[in-house]
Structure formats: C-alpha cells, structure tokens
Image (cartoon, rainbow, N blue to C red; front, side, top):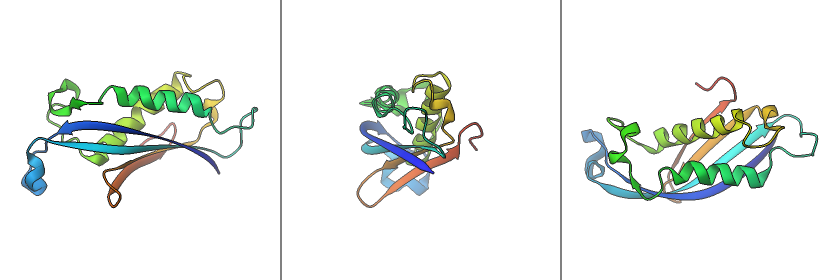
Amino acid sequence: MYSVRVRDRVMIAHSFKGEIFGPAQRLHGATYLVDVTFERPQLDPDGLVVDIGRAHAVLAEVLAHIAYRNLDEMPEFAGVNTTTEFLARWIFERVREAIAAGRLGPHAHGLTGLAVELAESDIAWAGYRAALGRAE
C-alpha cells in the first residue's frame, strides 16, 4: 500500500459539556497539528499517490473554515462536544468530499484509504481512518 501524508496546523477555541471533561468544560483554546494520509494500492499514471500540492491546498481550505473560531458559536457544531476525535472525523468527511468532487485531481478516484490524525500535544493525539467509499 502506498501512502502520502500532508500536514498543517489549526487553532480553535471550544468548551465541553460533561463532568468527565473537568476544567475543559470552560472555554479554552487548542492548537492541533493535523496529518492527513492518503492511501492506494497502485500508483496513478503519473507515478503518484495524490498530488501533494492539491492535498495541501484542500487541507488548508478545510481547516480555514474552523481556524481561529470558537466552535461553540458555529451552528454546525451546536450541541456537540467538538473533541479531538470528533474533529478528526469532521476533517475526514470534508477531505473525502473534496476527493469525490475531483479537487485532488483526475486520478484521486483511485485512492482507497484516508486517515486524519490530530495531535493536541507531543504526547496526545486522536484520529479517524476508513476505506474511501464506506466510512464508518
């Protein structure tokens, strides 16, 4: 299996509901290091997994939607604990939509796997991975 990974960062603010979150129930900031991995069993006709430039551009576009925002104030996240795990899936879905729309190039339809990982720090991270076409 071949893979290509691109990386970016995003800063957000949010709070959580539920005693399990302790002091994180209060509004706080987070800076995530975001990795997106694209996978395919065979290289495309250009010898690529995916065009890295397009992959970076799509990731930047997805993250721009939430960058420097208080997620608690965004209607699409109303009533949701925007945990690291939740955000990994949210980013996954936006990147998957970009692949389906052809924004990662004409050969991106050959991608078979996608993974998103968010690092909260150098010792804690979470992610979401699924085969393309049947995310769970």
